[in-house]
Image (cartoon, rainbow, N blue to C red):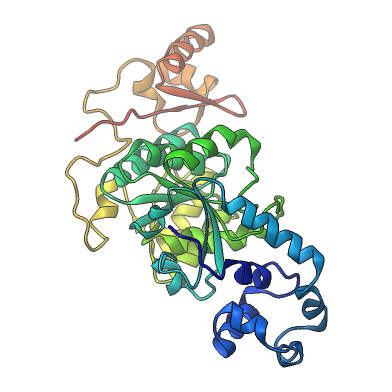
Amino acid sequence: MTPDPGLASWLQLSLSPGLGASTLRRLLSQFGLPEAVLARKRSELASFIAPAALDALDSSRVGEMVSRALEWVAEPDHWIVTLGDATYPRALLEIADPPPLLYAHGKAHFLQQPAIAVVGSRNASAQGETNAEQFARSLSNAGLTIVSGLALGIDAAAHRGGLAGAASTIAVLGTGIDIVYPSRNAELAAEISRVGLLVSEFPLGTPAAAQNFPRRNRLISGLGRGCLVVEAALASGSLITARTAADQGRDVFAIPGSIHSPLSKGCHALIKTGAKLVESADDVLSELSGFQPSGYAHTAQSSSAPSTGLLAVMGHDPVDVDSLCARAGLTAEQVAAELLRLELDGRVAALPGGLYQRLEKAHRA
């Protein structure tokens, strides 16, 4: 990909404080490409740009930011994609507020590939993370690039699944492209930059700020042909992404869960309002035009072998030791020993509050 020859002009407009994306698009509509905008007399631009933003347009600070961005994009696998580029993602041209430019690090061709958003809770359950990773891997192997937000929990699991599949993953950041947030995902972000793609609309050096994350969510949903919500509480930011996806005309999918789990409430609310209930990746693929169910993309389902021992009485909801003792007719010491064995075998996860939950091992149907 060759940078736009007028990239410095795009950067000058986009990096000027107070000159937002909507104003920039109005200027482009009125005057043409950024070089033509900047060639106009400042008095001509005054009816479009606030006085403070107009003063900042030619400031040394903006000039320094432009120089820094041009130095950054000169590095290998660094890209700045503008609305004027043929390589700008077509999917984002369909949304109401497409960013004038995108900073990207990694394999930029993924911006042109069919994709699906996979989102969910930062405080995910072990089963939720397993579901996210398995769904994402199956969908990636079916040809859909996995788009998520690099958060802890479901997002990170979705990215890992995408990386394990054929179509990789895109992480949309709520910070500048040169900042990894949360820092715990630094290794994952580095791997995505090598074989997937990191994307941000925010200028270099933009720190993590609460107001930026809801804004980036429209890009997560906008890049995808649909949005899959794995786990979400009722007050989850994932529901914002799902509703934005619906507003953008994307399909919304949700994985149901226990009626007792707070992390299932958001998914159930989405299903009640029209999201498609899915139990396998094939359920998602069957709803998307151009993709056929694979016949093997069932994920995180129960083994056909019957459960025995403590698993047989554990059920699928979180449960405490006392309840397990009563169900199994065992002492607390016996239950604790069996839970430890099952936990080491990856069949049970310990949850906050002294609860335990059964984990289903994925299999191929």
